[in-house]
Length: 132
Length: 134
Image (cartoon, rainbow over all chains, first blue to last red; front, side, top):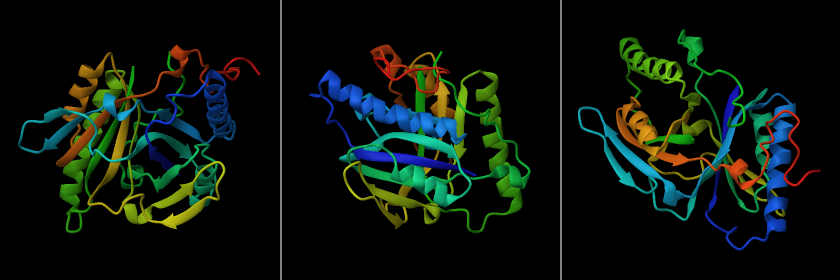
């Protein structure tokens, strides 16, 4: 079963980081990602650019979509990244979640909808590779 | 460039849905998935089960991790799904976002961090070593 791990935390905190601190942080995330790849769990995962880079599209059927600058909600805690992992069960997904190497934050773990059981096609092409 | 499209909206609205209505909805989602795949932009995308299936893990590296039932926030609007798309630029990502077949909600579009341009190797690269070597 696939699970989404949504990584939620306060933005910022790395502006004044030294190159050594940045490297230490990157190494921790690399280790997490690498482990999930080695265990065959990794399907996708990305860090997101800060919310100042966000745009939000409001959609309502029957109306024109409306694009605005900024994230969906101007809250202190924001989605900073995610992982999509193939896990045996929720317990395995939670073990990954407990190992997310951020300093402080929340990991919301949710199973994905499996529409193939209802006879619908999945377009998931398997693990997402590194950017070309 | 990779963009994350986060699908946000009020949960529910499906309690009395008929099989025909489900089929009509799914036809739209399948069409979007197929279009995005045929266009070469689709990297990943999933619908999420409702937040009553969620668990939230609180904490960090130097703290105990605490698992609680439920989503991060008990808000009316929740994340219902996402797409990860490979697009030329933000404008293209926004065009795709406008066509996501949600009935009533919002799509937050954000570029992903490009660590490789900062000199870091992607840990998914075969044989990649951590930044700066091992």
